[in-house]
Image: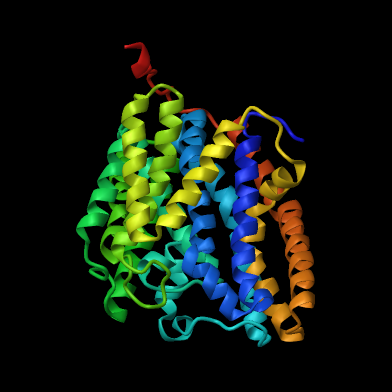
Amino acid sequence: MTQGRLAWLDALRGWAAIIVALFHVSPLVLGTTLHLRIFGVIDLGKYGVLLFFLVSGYVIPMSLERHGDLRRFWVGRLLRIYPAYLLAVAVALTLGAAGLMRMPGQVATETTTAILGHATMLQDLLGTRGVVRPFWTLSFEMAFYLIVAGLFAWRRHRDSAWWAAGLTVVAAVGPPDDLLGATAAGRRITAVVAFLLLAGGLCAYIIGRRPLALAAGAAGICAVALPLLNGHATDEVTSRSSAQAAQMLAVMFAGTVIYRAQHGEIRRPAAAVVLLLVAIGVAVQIKPSVAAAVAATFALAWALRRRGVPVALTRLGAISYSLYLLHIPVLAVVRRFTDDPVLTAVAFAAGSLAVAWAGHRWVEQPAQALARRFSRHSPAGPPEPRRTPVSAR
């Protein structure tokens, strides 16, 4: 057993990564018929992803407010997510060139959009598919980072409950699916604009001047337009509608609501109402079974957060990002050499864990060490004004 303040979150990450990987190998091991029967009851892929989203929603404000500085936050985030991501891109392109992995057609037909989409991690919300299919979730992660950083710049980052509830309501109304990317030309223009705003915003945050940070923050908040208006620009993307995309973003803000309620920044009855609303939205937009399973899993982990956590889960949590990014390339290779269900399961498990450990050890950890050195030597911004918890008012 492992104990620690955040061990339960590592365990959730590890569990979610295993569920997503099992979901992807399931048709080859269990057979398509049984896989689809299970899928008819619960979409385990979305279940695992929404667990990741809840954890991100809980952790990101903690990270941002611990840094207390947008420059430190972004440098830390970029060094946390991009090195392993670029490794996965390189692996996928290498396997694609070797004929071991199929590349999305848009890489050739919409090359500019595909390149800019991968550069910004916003590919799915721009209407293009990633070279590794699970990259679609990174689009939501990046949109969430941009929005939360923008809210922090404008000192509105504690409005999480309004965002979670508001996105759920908008999802229920049913926004347009492809307003910004119904055509190849529209997707290219949107990709260029998104790239310029992201690059300019990051430069502004790193420069650290308050007027520039406010402008970058405003642009970051506008990133919400992508899931709200372009959530299903093409059939190549994973979210089936802008309504579903908005709902998944609401789940991330629900994680922030839990964090705020824990620290007395939102009254718990109000937080409970918002969380119930988001759960209903997930039930409507995705599946009732997914909403129930995600809520039950997170609630169980929360209830047990002060107890010891199985070491296997925390270790899986440590390598979960590399596991998530690299298990599909491993599966693509395994499929080329065997179609035996048992051999597939064994080779996939061993290969995925091995490459995930290597990615974490040789790519993620050095990048995280660099981020820590930057944080120690970078001057902090002005401290954030403290608030009296609502429970004490």
